[in-house]
Length: 424
Image 1 (cartoon, one colour):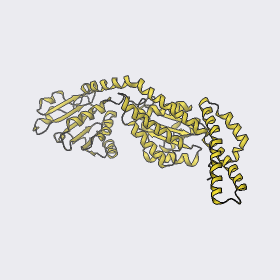
Image 2 (cartoon, rainbow, N blue to C red; image 1 turned 45 degrees about the horizontal axis):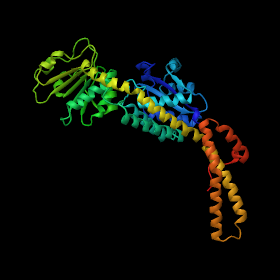
Image 3 (tube, rainbow, N blue to C red; image 1 turned 180 degrees about the vertical axis):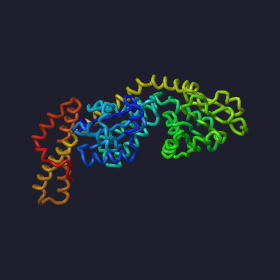
Image 4 (cartoon, rainbow, N blue to C red; image 1 turned 90 degrees about the vertical axis):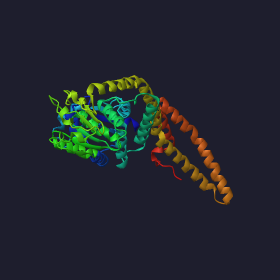
């Protein structure tokens, strides 16, 4: 069964943002896909991971269902020409490649920002949705918990998650540091390109804050604000209200600065104003710091700090991969043994039927104490008899030779006719 694990992936590595947006799913869409798999396909277990950078479906099936899954994505997202996007999808039909890819994605090796802190939580959510829809069986449960444990080891034993390694992470880290003494800082996020969106989502890491989102297209601001639980402000209003904010984070596209020194000329230095210019070209006038209490951080300041953290993360990759490889080896051993567990159960059941049949022949005329002793002795015998075949099966699994031994046991005990569960 474990060899039937596969994956299909569309990510930032080979698909532009416009395409990724088309095939992105929210929680309800992910669950609808899982229910479809359960009701209409031979997929026994599945995981749907959808973020701003990737949409991936992991599934267990004896068949390659990539083409059908792409069509289903098209139906779910109402994309009539979904076949035109098929080249953006990468298939992992080899079990080992699919497992390794899920490890790498979950730990952050495949993230746009190496070591992304968010991805493991997004994978945990996807796993919860699979469990909610009864599409997580023994294989997926074991795989996901192995990944979570591996992630814990990576965090504790390497520098892979140390520091902030993206502009948005660094910005939010600085905001958090600079406003630590403010009970509830007022924050304006101006401009919702890719960086602005990342900043909004990363601001969730700051517990107490009041965030307003502003964009030239109000509908875009409203959609993201609703997603994150923030408020909105019209683009035409942000200048007159600029001094009301403790923090302004601007990543808006503009040929000339739209936040100027004149907006703060009447600023009373009751508290500092922190401005972050993440735009290229810059959208905040450089001499704004002439105003007392106004501090400006530009993209170069922030990128420099991010680069240092990124270098540490890149240097830690060999250690991370070594930890992952050990985890995959252990998981593979378990997966192989899982394949023979039905055979072990059936063999136990066959021997138990023989034991019960023989006990029934001889138990008549025995008193309670004698009957109890007979049960105890015969059960002990069966446990010792079955111990060697089980050990041999597990050893054969490690050598990749389990099939021949399974065939012998099937012939000797007619295991195909036995139920999967041991009778009590």
